[in-house]
Image (cartoon, rainbow, N blue to C red):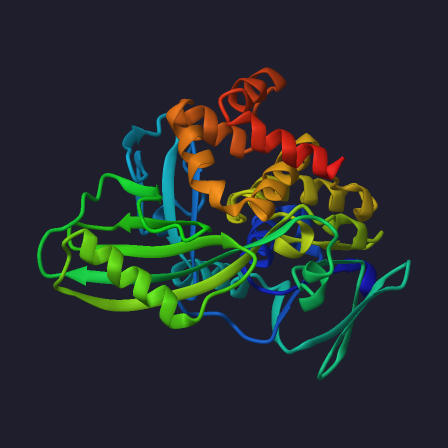
Amino acid sequence: MRENTFIITGAGASGLLLAYAIANDTYFDDYQILIIDKEIKNKNDRTWCFWEKEANDFEHLLMHSWQNLQIGGKHTFMQIPTAPYTYKMLQSKPFYKAIMNTITAKTNMTFIEDTIVAVNDKDTYVEVVTNKATYEGAKVFSSLLKSDEITKTTKPLLWQHFKGWYIKTENKEFDSDAATFMDFSIPQEGNTCFMYVLPISATEALVEYTLFSDELLEDKAYDKALENYLTTLDIANYTVTETEKGKIPMTTHNFYTKNTKNVLHIGTSGGFTKPSTGYTFKSMQKRIPLIIEAIKNNTSLDTLFSTNRFTSYDTILLELLAKENHLGSEIFISLFENNPIASILKFLDEDTSHAEELAIINTLPKKPFLKAFKRIL
């Protein structure tokens, strides 16, 4: 029956995290849960990283973790302990497998391989139309994102785009106790760009070229930047074992306005990606208890999330980078040089007080931020 059915459309990280939470809550044992996606994901198609103080449910799946982060620039290098936070790395393949095992073990949860055509809120129920059938449920949680929604936004928009190589070296080249969070020592060429290095062992690492800009690059440009960087590190003998490539929208576009009484958009489609960093995984985890509570209380889903003061902070930064992208390295290096890293991570997690936020803001170059602030007034 539709009133006893909840539907999750899209089985990426956000959809599967919600499915996992539902599977582990006995409240939902008497409900039918449908998860619909065009395919069952079973590959290492992405890597999620996040920081936290405590262990989580996926600790046993982590590929690696670090308690030191490195920040580099043309004339600076910092290695900073992250305590009380730990920076964690999770590959998608073991995550997908673990969640799918949980889903298949539940008799009330069904995974449907099909392409979704439309999601229609009918006020008293929701209709999900696929290529092969039509399904009805009380609530739908959708991570589906229309391709033109972001590009039509009136808010500042940049793309965090990247290509990464998993490499294995012949010699011991890496310190697996420290991750390179941002290395701005590479040519900036008018953009905000950096290298991101996650050492898994002394001979294995993910090396990723990342840019914050309004245009993507040709594939060979990412490869050339990665080759050049490894050369500067004097790493010559290596094998590329895997690659990953992607793009993440950096925008404070108001995704919440498309939520309805019975349809909640989640993940990037729901505005859960942190606009100024591109991190989504931990952001979704933080929102899940609120979503679960809303389901149990039959709360109208269009009232669940909205913008806050951190949205304003992100809007100002993105406006600055959209107009003066070349200032990115200066701003981020200033941030890490003048603030404890634990305070920065707490701020990026949106857990800080007004006083803590003001202390951080006061360490940043004032002129470009004031110019950006005036433009968005």
